[in-house]
Image (cartoon, rainbow, N blue to C red; front, side, top):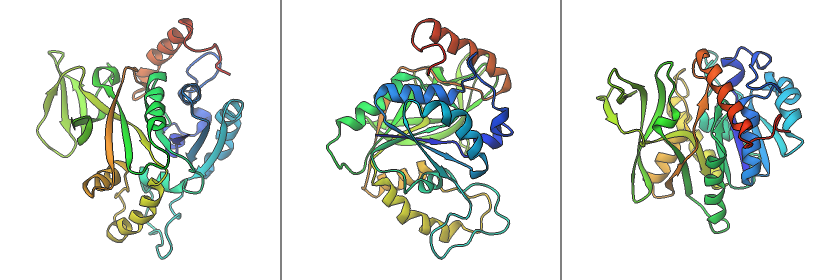
Length: 299
C-alpha cells in the first residue's frame, strides 16, 4: 500500500523548503516522523506531490533521508497539467486543489493508498488504523473509502483558532462534514463556526474531526479522470475555484459509487499552525523520543 503526501503548498507556506525549521536536534521535519510512522504501520511506498521548483530541496533533504527505509516517488502538481482540450487561464495562480494534486500522481499510484498533509503530525495509531482498514478489504475493492478522524480536543492549539472538518456519521459511515473555524471560548467550551456562514455550535472534546487523512482504493484515480474535465467545464475561468477531494468523495457517495467509513484514532495531532506552536511541537516530539516511541534521529 502507498502513502501519498500532499506537499505542493509546503514550500510556499514556509518561504521555500530551505527555510523549513527542523523539529528535533537531528534536523528532522514533521514529515520525517509521518513517513517513519507510515512505514512502521506497513506502508511500503511514498509518493510526494510537490511543486517542481522544490524538487531538488525535497530530494536533498527529506527524500535523501527516507529513501533509506521506503520506496520514494515524486509527482509534480502543475497548473498546466490539465486534460486534453483545456488550457490554463493566464490569470490563474492558485493551485487547482487537493483532488488535482492526487490527479497529478495518477501515473504513480498503483495500489490502495492513503493521503496526508505534508505538514501535519498524525501519530502512529492513525496510520495503523488506516493500514488495517485497507488490509481488511477484499482484493480489488472499489468505493470502500475511509476517513481517519481525531478527537477535536487532540487537534487544537492554545495560540488561536484552527480549521477542522467536523464529522457527522450514521452506523459508522460519514454523512456530513462541516468545515469550521474552531476555538475555545472564555468558558473553555469548544465552539465551531462553519466556514459557509452557518450558525456556530458547541461540541464535546471527543467530537471527531477530519484532518485530511483519507484511505482510498486505487480506482479513485479513474473517478478523478472522469470528474476533473466535468469540473473544469464549470470552473475553469474562476481563479479561486478548487477541485477538492472531500467534494469528489461526497459526490461519489451521493451517486452510490462509494462509501466513506469513519475511523477513530487515539493519536494526538501536532502542527505548526502558528509560529508560536513550534516550541510545543518540539517538546512533544522530544517527549515521544524519550518515551522510546521513536528512535533518536529516526533513521
